[in-house]
Image (cartoon, rainbow, N blue to C red; front, side):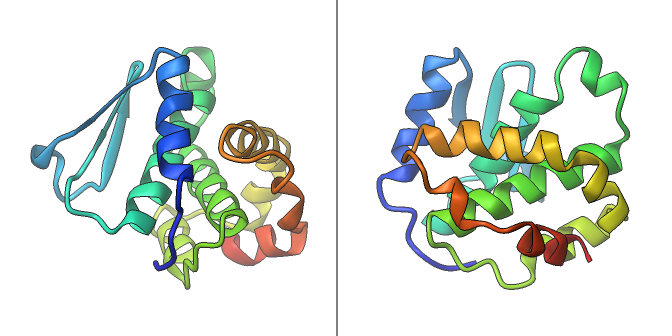
Length: 152
């Protein structure tokens, strides 16, 4: 993962604060890079800015998508695939280079193109909400083909 999220990292943190979601850094979550739990997000300190932003977007997606009834109605595979594809879309939109990191993560949780197709509407809506906070109108830069590529 490389690139510079610029001011988007702080804008996303402000977006979370505005929604009442606490953000902190915790060394004891290792080997996880981030965790989301009931209105709180913890990130592993020491990540590059690109990694930190991508991890924060992933955990923000969990906060927006996977609380209450939707959490119990989905599998871990669905939740992790959705959150990682949101992180891929938002990261690409702000200029990060993810290489195969997102695809590798999705495969780790056995995600696939079929699951992605079923979740596409939720992924697009969530990515749009997150992207609207950092910078309006950059969500249009990611195509459906690019989304399918990451889950293949």
